[in-house]
Length: 106
Image 1 (cartoon, rainbow, N blue to C red):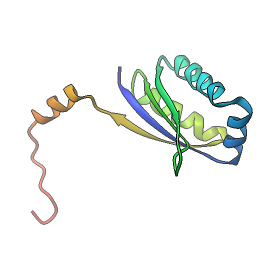
Image 2 (image 1 turned 180 degrees about the vertical axis):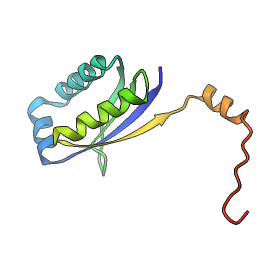
Image 3 (image 1 turned 90 degrees about the horizontal axis):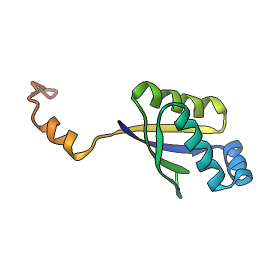
Image 4 (image 1 turned 120 degrees about the horizontal axis):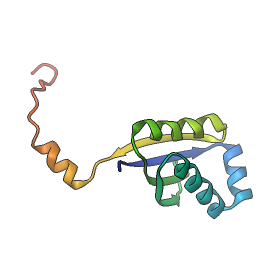
């Protein structure tokens, strides 16, 4: 199943909810939301800086990943950046594909 990195930025509403629910409560909520989409949570962390929470998740595909990101955005509690993760074996396959890309001016 494809893996994704969700990088979440919380606004004041999201931070208030996190403090009320607790960090573990939010992890449970994320786990339940992913399960409803046919996916699972691999790991979940909070961080300092411009990103407040990081989650590595497995989902059936891009449609489900987009649905999860849209749900976060529509909640009004923050936003999420979604990164598609490629494992080393997939990268080996990428290396085997010839492309005919020409850089600008090349």
